[in-house]
Amino acid sequence: MITIKRSQTCNGGGSFTFFIKGDKKFICPAWIEVPMDTELKDVAVEESPKAPQIKVTPDKEWTFTGSKGNLYSVTRNMGSYACTCPASMFQKFKDCKHIVQAKAEENLL
Image 1 (cartoon, rainbow, N blue to C red):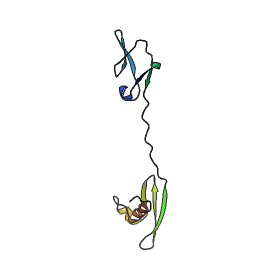
Image 2 (cartoon, one colour):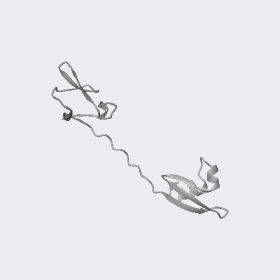
Image 3 (cartoon, rainbow, N blue to C red):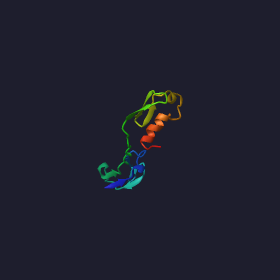
Image 4 (cartoon, rainbow, N blue to C red):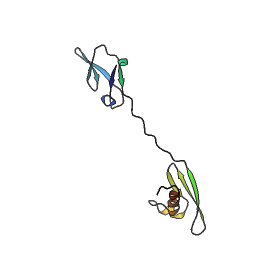
């Protein structure tokens, strides 16, 4: 059994072919010389790397009372936070105080 690395295959995808030149046989594209009687079943390609596991936090919702007594809802959906308060609609690149408070409850700050 001949084992080749993924980096020795076409675009690292695991595909290869045989090329015969004269009385020599090669695995291409890496140009690894192999015996003439070598067949596809005799060549193994190393396993592809495992995809990293991503920790997904479950969706959650909080309710906060604003400074004037209004109730505002903070939601976390797929790791992204949103609030129903007017400040969060105008502060596109900054968290409103309700989102900051929700993150603080989760010890993310």
